[in-house]
Image (cartoon, rainbow, N blue to C red; front, side, top):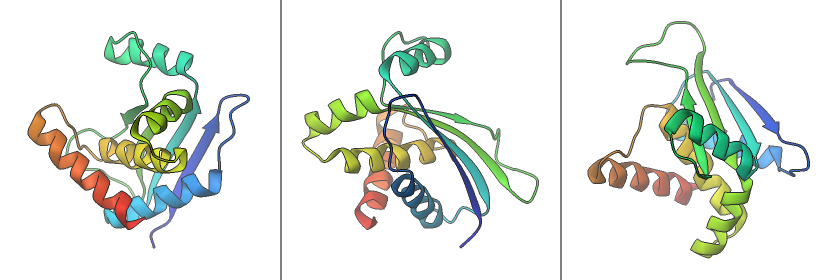
Length: 144
């Protein structure tokens, strides 16, 4: 297994199972055959993610997950890839879990996988891309 560096940041008063987060990210990176890399994950509330969504996507509303890739283009140079940052709103994640009738831990895994796929350049701007990305996301989740 390649060495991974995972940095987890949590806003005040939010509880996160860091071991489960790391396990999900490591499994996803291995499944996607990603070599040595660094990933940062921040867990925030709706107010913070709404501010980021407004600033970077011009959408003045909370969302569940945002990804900020550090790589541009196809190549990377150096022994360790710095993939980027994933930001997850646990408030929105919990609402999604209720809406989709799944355990919050499963929805959290889904958002972590989704964030990694975005960091690796996957997107869902069109229906075809969305279907392909979401199918891969659910496939990885099913193997967890």
